[in-house]
Length: 139
Image 1 (cartoon, rainbow, N blue to C red):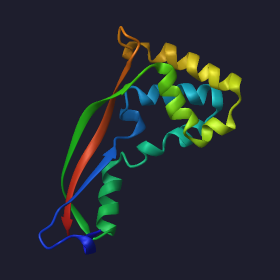
Image 2 (cartoon, rainbow, N blue to C red):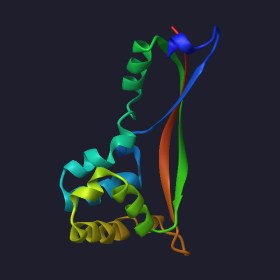
Image 3 (cartoon, rainbow, N blue to C red):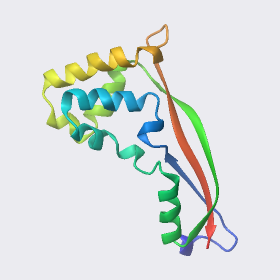
């Protein structure tokens, strides 16, 4: 990355915080693992693997960059419903191809229960989602 940065330039990165920092997606992944097995965490957890800022700093160093600043922010993921959330997160990953219809239904039912506090009066889902903004310069 450092070799493509112009002189005096800055690289901006965004990574999602780890799964343990995700108030909504953490429980969703737990529900999936409960019914689909421990591999569900790996199959649904790829978004969250760069959530460790020390690890991201090591990657930046290896790329010839020096992290100048990090900022953690919490945003909101908005989805039409719990069913839509599960469909998006499960069926768009290899997990969706590895489970039966019965297991999928159990994940949906479990997510409806586990994530009910994130559902609005209109049935929409508003999940907090935590990410890190990182700025780095050539080392």
